[in-house]
Image (cartoon, rainbow, N blue to C red; front, side, top):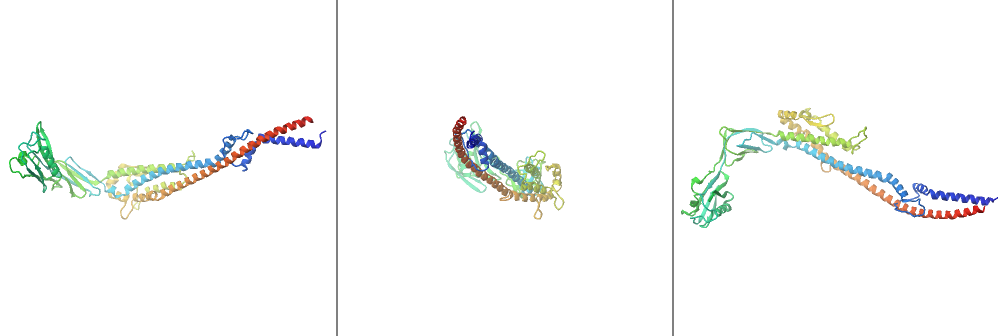
Length: 495
């Protein structure tokens, strides 16, 4: 019978064998328990020792993946959301600025001072500056102003010396100024032209016109209407330039300078030019051609309703774009579970609420945009009834302007809206502060991400080293177990 001591030794040896086998075959579970309990730090490995075949890089990858799913992935999702919010903010900022521009235009005086002109004809066209008086008038019996035009007798050459020409100085007088052009018996028609343009070009235009196969004439045209051209020559002989070119012959004055005449509301008006801007403040009358005796231009200058209507249409479009996007950004659909990017942001939600409140309000006279054909349906979509707007404008344009843009005593609806939009989009105002908040929140998330990422990197660098060390230990345990197994087997065989 074996002794009690021998029995105890065998029992101990069997326990050690079982423990060693358990550690060898379940080391990954043991290490995971140690890791979760915080006894093992972390890092990243590509390969381990070759002792156990248990502590593999795949095990570390799984441990890291578990950590990243809890620590890193949520931060990545938050950063992605922060980027999406910044993109959404850029869109919202653009829509707010565009809408503000519409409100500003409808609030400003320039829109209502714009003038439309009707009644222009081929003979008369009228333009009116912003703010000019609204009025009607007629223009009849137009006889437009003309510029003085002279031509010379014909010559067979234009670039060779003029035949039978002497020497002297031609003086051209126009509008109280004298211009002296010297010539010689070697001067050509082209040289005379060039001399006139160089000396008197600000008042007279000289050109050489080919009127036949070998026939050229010098043509002189005053640059301004109703300014007569006269000529003088220091050479009094027949070979002077005046006589050689027949510039003193009245028959060669093919178009005489004259003033413009017309009747304005039956009153005869005379002007030196065909562009009259000194008759009505801010109004320019252009005489394009002579009128027949029976012709008449009935001109009407009025407030430009077309520009106002166009601006109103643009306002409606910009409002719908802004509000639709605001609704998308703040939506919360319980059925589908979808939510807008700014669903939980009270600031963004307040924008549509405040804007809608302004555009639907009534003034102290119970006047509102509805009275001008601007309505909101049950979904908040704005529309413009053009016929209703045109009727209201035609009925009371001054009242509409007062309701829209106000005066020194009262703020119009678009004045209030423009003021509110300035609070949002102005320098260092609400939108700017909101942008700063979004940027700061994103920066904090990125900083947290970098910190946690660095912490995981460090942890798994340490864990890699420990796994390699544990792998070597297990290898030694395996070797020792083999020896121990041999000793136990030998002892058992003796028994």
